[in-house]
Length: 341
Image (cartoon, rainbow, N blue to C red; front, side):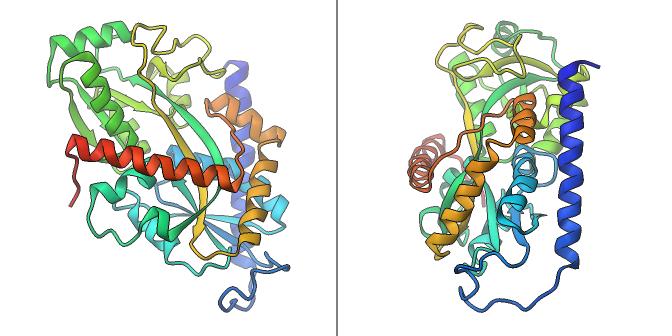
């Protein structure tokens, strides 16, 4: 077992244990429920904070939440309890967060694909990103990697491009749901190659990876955090990093430009949001805790080993980025004619 893999496993085990301890503490702690935003002043927080993840355990969103869980709890002085609420292309968890009491005790770990595309994909989903959610701060920026499973006979991006062209409409690609960034990435790759591929949507990255590893789907363009153990175990092949620079966790994997497909980049973000109306002082306090967490040695070690980038942003910077991506991704969805009922 290599040094990087040992560090990754040890660090993630420590984070998982800390998360379990935080959850236990949150379950055991009792107290009176706050009314309105009364508790969200100078004494906030005085009880555990729930961080909703709108995906199943094991994907990039869940990874980002657990990466920051312990450090956030230590800085804020209360346990951060992760609640996975998947379904509806993320809408089940997002809607629960948007409808929660805006007192700072319910937060959302949001995925940029859901934030930017869902309102264009589905009518009347019950929430609107610029109206119902308040940006708090960035957790991770995640360059995507083109992964291939054992079911497709390619070992490089050039071979994949040739295989797609030779088998139009028969190469399959997974995604975490219709309209997700992985779906959009697959559409853009097919456009660049000049041949269609068959989209196979899943309810999150973890089940998608299972089918890619099992040879039932050919490729998956996704963030590396959820795929590193499979890659290191030889169950996946990393063909190219769809970003401007190589990843320290994958130093031997070329960028798409280096591999012959310049201009093809796919980056996603995972960020914390709060229900609209949450007091600005609370939002600033969580933002400061997020930025402090990016300096935590354990967080930095696991992030580097997992291929994600720590990018601390102010509340205003996160708000600007989120609004830009709502405009950009919604336009791509509409132009591609993607729709979910």
